[in-house]
Amino acid sequence: MSGTSVDAIDCALVRCRGDQVMIVATHEHTLPPRIKSQIAAISHSGPDEIERMGVLDRALGLLFAEATMQLLSLAGKQPGDIKAIGSHGQTIRHRPPSTATGIEASFSLQIGDPNTIAEKTGITTIADFRRRDIAAGGEGAPLAPAFHAAAFAKPGVARAIVNIGGIANASIIDGSELLMGFDTGPGNTLLDHWIARHRKEPYDHDGQWSSAGQVHPALLKKLLAHTYFSKTGARSTGKEAFNLAWLDSQLGECDAITAADVQTTLVELTCTSITRAIRHCPMDVSEVYVCGGGSHNSHLMQRLAQCLSPAALASTSAIGMDPDWVEAVTFAWLASRTLEGLSGNSKAVTGASGTRVLGGIYPGGT
Image 1 (cartoon, helix red, strand yellow):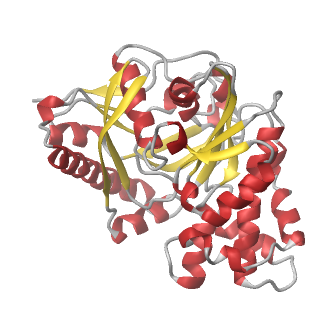
Image 2 (spheres, helix red, strand yellow):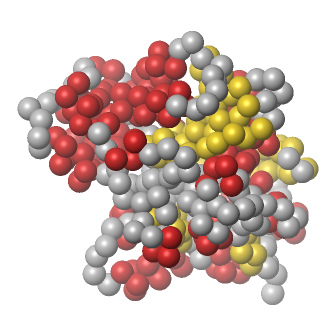
Protein backbone atom coordinates (compact mmCIF):
# COMPACT_ATOMS: atom_id res chain seq x y z
CA MET A 1 0.00 0.00 0.00
CA SER A 2 1.29 3.45 -0.98
CA GLY A 3 -1.20 6.11 -0.01
CA THR A 4 -1.98 9.77 -0.49
CA SER A 5 0.77 10.78 1.92
CA VAL A 6 3.39 9.09 -0.32
CA ASP A 7 5.57 8.50 2.75
CA ALA A 8 6.55 4.85 2.13
CA ILE A 9 5.39 1.49 0.80
CA ASP A 10 3.63 -0.39 3.61
CA CYS A 11 3.97 -4.16 3.25
CA ALA A 12 2.22 -6.77 5.38
CA LEU A 13 2.49 -10.53 5.20
CA VAL A 14 -0.95 -11.79 6.16
CA ARG A 15 -2.50 -15.17 6.78
CA CYS A 16 -6.16 -15.12 5.72
CA ARG A 17 -8.77 -17.68 6.76
CA GLY A 18 -12.04 -16.30 5.47
CA ASP A 19 -12.61 -13.04 7.33
CA GLN A 20 -10.01 -13.92 9.96
CA VAL A 21 -6.62 -12.32 9.36
CA MET A 22 -3.31 -12.58 11.18
CA ILE A 23 -0.30 -10.37 10.54
CA VAL A 24 2.80 -12.53 10.16
CA ALA A 25 5.36 -9.83 9.33
CA THR A 26 5.56 -6.20 8.23
CA HIS A 27 8.00 -3.96 6.38
CA GLU A 28 8.08 -0.25 5.61
CA HIS A 29 9.92 0.23 2.32
CA THR A 30 11.48 3.60 1.53
CA LEU A 31 10.32 5.57 -1.49
CA PRO A 32 13.31 7.40 -3.02
CA PRO A 33 12.96 11.22 -3.08
CA ARG A 34 13.14 11.16 -6.88
CA ILE A 35 10.12 8.84 -7.05
CA LYS A 36 8.20 10.97 -4.54
CA SER A 37 8.82 14.04 -6.68
CA GLN A 38 7.66 12.22 -9.80
CA ILE A 39 4.47 11.07 -8.05
CA ALA A 40 3.75 14.64 -6.92
CA ALA A 41 4.32 15.95 -10.43
CA ILE A 42 2.18 13.37 -12.23
CA SER A 43 -0.70 13.88 -9.78
CA HIS A 44 -1.54 17.13 -11.58
CA SER A 45 -2.00 17.85 -15.27
CA GLY A 46 1.19 18.79 -17.07
CA PRO A 47 3.22 18.28 -20.25
CA ASP A 48 4.19 14.83 -21.53
CA GLU A 49 1.92 13.10 -19.03
CA ILE A 50 1.58 9.75 -20.82
CA GLU A 51 5.35 9.31 -21.20
CA ARG A 52 6.02 10.27 -17.58
CA MET A 53 3.21 8.06 -16.30
CA GLY A 54 4.40 5.04 -18.27
CA VAL A 55 7.94 5.33 -16.95
CA LEU A 56 6.76 5.88 -13.37
CA ASP A 57 4.29 2.99 -13.61
CA ARG A 58 7.15 0.61 -14.36
CA ALA A 59 9.46 2.17 -11.76
CA LEU A 60 6.84 1.75 -9.05
CA GLY A 61 6.16 -1.82 -10.13
CA LEU A 62 9.86 -2.57 -9.65
CA LEU A 63 9.81 -0.88 -6.23
CA PHE A 64 6.72 -2.79 -5.10
CA ALA A 65 8.40 -6.04 -6.20
CA GLU A 66 11.57 -5.07 -4.32
CA ALA A 67 9.52 -4.27 -1.23
CA THR A 68 7.81 -7.66 -1.44
CA MET A 69 11.07 -9.56 -1.68
CA GLN A 70 12.52 -7.60 1.25
CA LEU A 71 9.47 -8.46 3.35
CA LEU A 72 9.82 -12.15 2.49
CA SER A 73 13.51 -12.08 3.39
CA LEU A 74 12.71 -10.52 6.77
CA ALA A 75 10.01 -13.14 7.37
CA GLY A 76 12.17 -16.08 6.28
CA LYS A 77 9.74 -16.95 3.48
CA GLN A 78 10.13 -17.87 -0.19
CA PRO A 79 7.92 -16.70 -3.09
CA GLY A 80 6.50 -20.22 -3.31
CA ASP A 81 5.12 -19.83 0.21
CA ILE A 82 2.90 -16.95 -0.87
CA LYS A 83 -0.50 -17.37 -2.49
CA ALA A 84 -0.79 -13.85 -3.87
CA ILE A 85 0.13 -10.19 -3.59
CA GLY A 86 -2.62 -7.60 -3.19
CA SER A 87 -1.28 -4.31 -4.55
CA HIS A 88 -3.28 -1.12 -4.15
CA GLY A 89 -0.82 0.85 -6.27
CA GLN A 90 -0.16 4.57 -6.11
CA THR A 91 -3.17 6.78 -6.79
CA ILE A 92 -2.29 9.58 -9.20
CA ARG A 93 -5.82 10.77 -10.01
CA HIS A 94 -9.22 10.20 -8.41
CA ARG A 95 -12.33 11.68 -10.00
CA PRO A 96 -15.34 9.72 -8.71
CA PRO A 97 -18.95 10.23 -9.82
CA SER A 98 -19.60 12.59 -6.90
CA THR A 99 -17.06 15.08 -8.29
CA ALA A 100 -16.92 14.26 -12.02
CA THR A 101 -19.10 15.93 -14.66
CA GLY A 102 -20.96 12.69 -15.24
CA ILE A 103 -20.71 8.95 -14.59
CA GLU A 104 -18.99 8.39 -17.95
CA ALA A 105 -16.32 10.97 -17.02
CA SER A 106 -15.53 9.41 -13.63
CA PHE A 107 -12.33 7.43 -13.10
CA SER A 108 -9.67 6.48 -10.57
CA LEU A 109 -6.12 5.68 -11.62
CA GLN A 110 -3.50 3.79 -9.63
CA ILE A 111 -0.07 2.94 -11.03
CA GLY A 112 2.62 0.42 -10.08
CA ASP A 113 2.58 -2.10 -12.93
CA PRO A 114 1.22 -5.45 -11.60
CA ASN A 115 2.75 -7.29 -14.57
CA THR A 116 6.17 -6.14 -13.37
CA ILE A 117 5.41 -7.17 -9.78
CA ALA A 118 4.29 -10.66 -10.87
CA GLU A 119 7.26 -11.07 -13.21
CA LYS A 120 9.91 -9.97 -10.72
CA THR A 121 8.53 -11.86 -7.73
CA GLY A 122 7.02 -14.89 -9.45
CA ILE A 123 3.93 -14.39 -7.28
CA THR A 124 0.39 -13.97 -8.59
CA THR A 125 -0.57 -10.32 -8.15
CA ILE A 126 -4.03 -8.80 -7.76
CA ALA A 127 -4.30 -5.08 -8.49
CA ASP A 128 -6.56 -2.35 -9.91
CA PHE A 129 -9.21 -2.76 -7.21
CA ARG A 130 -11.08 0.50 -7.68
CA ARG A 131 -12.08 0.67 -11.32
CA ARG A 132 -14.62 -2.18 -11.32
CA ASP A 133 -16.59 -0.41 -8.61
CA ILE A 134 -16.51 2.82 -10.64
CA ALA A 135 -17.64 0.91 -13.73
CA ALA A 136 -20.62 -0.23 -11.65
CA GLY A 137 -21.48 3.39 -10.84
CA GLY A 138 -19.62 3.57 -7.53
CA GLU A 139 -17.11 5.98 -6.07
CA GLY A 140 -14.28 3.45 -6.21
CA ALA A 141 -13.46 4.49 -2.63
CA PRO A 142 -13.22 4.01 0.21
CA LEU A 143 -12.73 0.24 -0.07
CA ALA A 144 -11.56 -0.33 3.50
CA PRO A 145 -15.04 -0.31 5.14
CA ALA A 146 -15.89 -3.86 3.99
CA PHE A 147 -12.71 -5.09 5.67
CA HIS A 148 -13.30 -2.94 8.73
CA ALA A 149 -16.69 -4.59 9.18
CA ALA A 150 -15.23 -8.08 8.71
CA ALA A 151 -12.35 -7.50 11.12
CA PHE A 152 -13.71 -5.13 13.76
CA ALA A 153 -17.48 -5.61 14.06
CA LYS A 154 -18.82 -6.51 17.50
CA PRO A 155 -22.41 -7.65 18.06
CA GLY A 156 -24.48 -5.13 19.97
CA VAL A 157 -21.90 -2.32 19.65
CA ALA A 158 -22.08 0.74 17.39
CA ARG A 159 -18.55 1.51 16.19
CA ALA A 160 -16.76 3.78 13.79
CA ILE A 161 -13.38 2.86 12.34
CA VAL A 162 -11.55 5.97 11.15
CA ASN A 163 -8.48 5.82 8.97
CA ILE A 164 -6.50 9.06 9.08
CA GLY A 165 -4.09 8.89 6.19
CA GLY A 166 -3.60 11.67 3.67
CA ILE A 167 -7.38 11.63 3.29
CA ALA A 168 -9.52 10.45 6.22
CA ASN A 169 -12.33 7.92 5.89
CA ALA A 170 -14.82 6.41 8.29
CA SER A 171 -16.70 3.12 8.46
CA ILE A 172 -19.93 3.04 10.49
CA ILE A 173 -20.68 -0.42 11.86
CA ASP A 174 -23.82 -1.28 13.82
CA GLY A 175 -23.19 -4.62 15.48
CA SER A 176 -22.20 -6.88 12.58
CA GLU A 177 -23.75 -4.66 9.89
CA LEU A 178 -21.79 -2.16 7.82
CA LEU A 179 -24.21 0.75 7.59
CA MET A 180 -22.10 3.21 5.63
CA GLY A 181 -18.60 4.42 4.88
CA PHE A 182 -17.19 7.57 3.31
CA ASP A 183 -14.21 9.85 3.01
CA THR A 184 -14.60 12.61 5.58
CA GLY A 185 -12.11 15.02 3.97
CA PRO A 186 -8.43 15.84 4.54
CA GLY A 187 -6.58 13.80 7.13
CA ASN A 188 -2.84 14.45 7.12
CA THR A 189 -2.31 15.69 3.58
CA LEU A 190 -2.62 19.43 4.28
CA LEU A 191 -0.80 19.12 7.60
CA ASP A 192 2.14 17.33 5.97
CA HIS A 193 2.44 19.70 3.04
CA TRP A 194 2.15 22.80 5.22
CA ILE A 195 4.92 21.75 7.62
CA ALA A 196 7.08 20.65 4.69
CA ARG A 197 6.74 24.12 3.19
CA HIS A 198 7.46 26.05 6.37
CA ARG A 199 9.75 23.80 8.42
CA LYS A 200 11.17 21.37 5.84
CA GLU A 201 9.87 18.43 7.87
CA PRO A 202 7.89 15.51 6.38
CA TYR A 203 5.23 15.59 9.11
CA ASP A 204 4.37 17.25 12.41
CA HIS A 205 5.90 14.80 14.88
CA ASP A 206 3.39 14.07 17.64
CA GLY A 207 1.56 17.29 16.69
CA GLN A 208 4.20 19.37 18.47
CA TRP A 209 3.97 22.32 16.05
CA SER A 210 0.17 22.39 15.83
CA SER A 211 -0.17 22.18 19.62
CA ALA A 212 1.82 25.44 19.91
CA GLY A 213 -0.61 27.46 17.78
CA GLN A 214 -4.20 28.62 18.04
CA VAL A 215 -7.24 27.91 15.89
CA HIS A 216 -8.11 30.77 13.55
CA PRO A 217 -11.95 30.78 13.55
CA ALA A 218 -12.38 32.77 10.32
CA LEU A 219 -10.03 30.49 8.39
CA LEU A 220 -11.68 27.37 9.81
CA LYS A 221 -15.09 28.64 8.73
CA LYS A 222 -13.81 29.26 5.19
CA LEU A 223 -12.21 25.82 4.96
CA LEU A 224 -15.37 24.11 6.18
CA ALA A 225 -17.35 25.93 3.49
CA HIS A 226 -15.80 23.63 0.87
CA THR A 227 -18.63 21.98 -1.06
CA TYR A 228 -17.38 18.49 -0.17
CA PHE A 229 -18.44 18.91 3.45
CA SER A 230 -22.07 19.43 2.45
CA LYS A 231 -22.25 16.10 0.59
CA THR A 232 -24.07 13.12 2.05
CA GLY A 233 -24.39 9.49 1.02
CA ALA A 234 -21.69 7.78 -1.06
CA ARG A 235 -18.78 10.15 -1.44
CA SER A 236 -15.02 10.17 -1.78
CA THR A 237 -12.35 12.77 -2.34
CA GLY A 238 -8.61 13.24 -2.72
CA LYS A 239 -5.78 15.69 -3.09
CA GLU A 240 -7.43 16.96 -6.26
CA ALA A 241 -9.81 18.83 -3.93
CA PHE A 242 -7.65 19.35 -0.84
CA ASN A 243 -4.17 20.65 -1.64
CA LEU A 244 -1.88 23.59 -0.92
CA ALA A 245 -3.18 25.57 -3.90
CA TRP A 246 -6.69 25.39 -2.43
CA LEU A 247 -5.40 26.28 1.04
CA ASP A 248 -3.47 29.25 -0.36
CA SER A 249 -6.63 30.53 -2.04
CA GLN A 250 -8.44 30.48 1.30
CA LEU A 251 -5.58 32.16 3.13
CA GLY A 252 -5.52 34.95 0.58
CA GLU A 253 -8.91 36.13 1.80
CA CYS A 254 -7.99 36.11 5.51
CA ASP A 255 -5.99 38.50 7.65
CA ALA A 256 -2.36 37.63 8.30
CA ILE A 257 -2.08 34.32 10.17
CA THR A 258 1.06 32.75 11.59
CA ALA A 259 2.16 29.48 10.00
CA ALA A 260 1.74 27.69 13.34
CA ASP A 261 -1.84 28.92 13.66
CA VAL A 262 -2.59 27.63 10.17
CA GLN A 263 -1.27 24.20 11.24
CA THR A 264 -3.46 24.25 14.34
CA THR A 265 -6.47 25.23 12.25
CA LEU A 266 -5.79 22.37 9.84
CA VAL A 267 -5.88 19.93 12.77
CA GLU A 268 -9.24 21.42 13.73
CA LEU A 269 -10.43 21.00 10.13
CA THR A 270 -9.58 17.29 10.20
CA CYS A 271 -11.20 16.73 13.60
CA THR A 272 -14.30 18.79 12.86
CA SER A 273 -14.95 17.18 9.48
CA ILE A 274 -14.56 13.67 10.94
CA THR A 275 -16.84 14.48 13.87
CA ARG A 276 -19.56 16.09 11.74
CA ALA A 277 -19.57 13.16 9.31
CA ILE A 278 -19.90 10.60 12.10
CA ARG A 279 -22.61 12.56 13.91
CA HIS A 280 -24.60 12.89 10.71
CA CYS A 281 -25.09 9.11 10.73
CA PRO A 282 -28.53 7.72 11.61
CA MET A 283 -27.25 6.17 14.86
CA ASP A 284 -25.21 7.11 17.89
CA VAL A 285 -21.68 5.74 17.71
CA SER A 286 -20.33 4.75 21.12
CA GLU A 287 -16.79 3.71 20.12
CA VAL A 288 -14.35 5.18 17.60
CA TYR A 289 -11.09 3.47 16.67
CA VAL A 290 -8.41 5.21 14.63
CA CYS A 291 -5.80 3.74 12.29
CA GLY A 292 -3.31 5.32 9.91
CA GLY A 293 -0.58 7.87 10.53
CA GLY A 294 -2.95 10.27 12.27
CA SER A 295 -3.23 7.85 15.18
CA HIS A 296 0.33 8.86 16.19
CA ASN A 297 -0.42 12.59 16.30
CA SER A 298 -1.13 13.19 19.99
CA HIS A 299 -2.51 16.69 19.48
CA LEU A 300 -4.88 15.54 16.73
CA MET A 301 -6.03 12.53 18.79
CA GLN A 302 -6.66 14.69 21.87
CA ARG A 303 -8.76 17.15 19.89
CA LEU A 304 -10.63 14.36 18.14
CA ALA A 305 -11.43 12.74 21.49
CA GLN A 306 -12.82 16.07 22.74
CA CYS A 307 -14.88 16.59 19.59
CA LEU A 308 -16.33 13.07 19.61
CA SER A 309 -17.11 12.89 23.34
CA PRO A 310 -18.97 11.09 24.85
CA ALA A 311 -17.96 8.41 22.34
CA ALA A 312 -14.79 6.61 23.46
CA LEU A 313 -11.70 7.08 21.25
CA ALA A 314 -8.70 4.76 20.88
CA SER A 315 -6.44 3.38 18.16
CA THR A 316 -7.20 0.03 16.53
CA SER A 317 -4.46 -1.53 18.66
CA ALA A 318 -7.16 -1.66 21.38
CA ILE A 319 -9.15 -4.10 19.22
CA GLY A 320 -6.28 -6.22 18.04
CA MET A 321 -4.55 -4.58 15.08
CA ASP A 322 -1.62 -2.20 14.85
CA PRO A 323 -2.95 1.04 13.32
CA ASP A 324 0.05 1.33 11.00
CA TRP A 325 -0.83 -1.82 9.08
CA VAL A 326 -4.62 -1.82 8.76
CA GLU A 327 -4.55 -0.44 5.20
CA ALA A 328 -1.95 -2.92 3.95
CA VAL A 329 -3.88 -5.78 5.55
CA THR A 330 -7.04 -4.50 3.86
CA PHE A 331 -5.59 -5.15 0.42
CA ALA A 332 -4.31 -8.59 1.39
CA TRP A 333 -7.87 -9.39 2.47
CA LEU A 334 -9.32 -7.90 -0.72
CA ALA A 335 -6.88 -9.98 -2.80
CA SER A 336 -7.96 -13.13 -0.97
CA ARG A 337 -11.60 -12.24 -1.71
CA THR A 338 -10.80 -11.80 -5.40
CA LEU A 339 -9.10 -15.19 -5.60
CA GLU A 340 -12.15 -16.80 -3.99
CA GLY A 341 -14.51 -15.04 -6.42
CA LEU A 342 -16.07 -13.01 -3.59
CA SER A 343 -17.08 -9.36 -3.65
CA GLY A 344 -14.86 -6.70 -2.11
CA ASN A 345 -16.99 -3.57 -2.29
CA SER A 346 -20.10 -2.45 -0.45
CA LYS A 347 -23.04 -0.84 -2.21
CA ALA A 348 -23.87 1.01 1.01
CA VAL A 349 -20.44 2.64 0.93
CA THR A 350 -19.54 3.40 -2.67
CA GLY A 351 -23.02 3.67 -4.17
CA ALA A 352 -22.25 1.06 -6.84
CA SER A 353 -25.20 -0.72 -8.44
CA GLY A 354 -24.19 -3.88 -6.61
CA THR A 355 -21.37 -5.88 -5.06
CA ARG A 356 -18.54 -6.86 -7.40
CA VAL A 357 -15.41 -9.01 -7.41
CA LEU A 358 -12.66 -6.39 -7.50
CA GLY A 359 -9.27 -6.32 -9.18
CA GLY A 360 -7.45 -8.00 -12.02
CA ILE A 361 -5.41 -11.18 -11.52
CA TYR A 362 -1.88 -11.31 -12.95
CA PRO A 363 -0.52 -14.85 -12.67
CA GLY A 364 2.94 -15.40 -11.27
CA GLY A 365 5.51 -17.89 -12.49
CA THR A 366 6.75 -18.14 -16.05
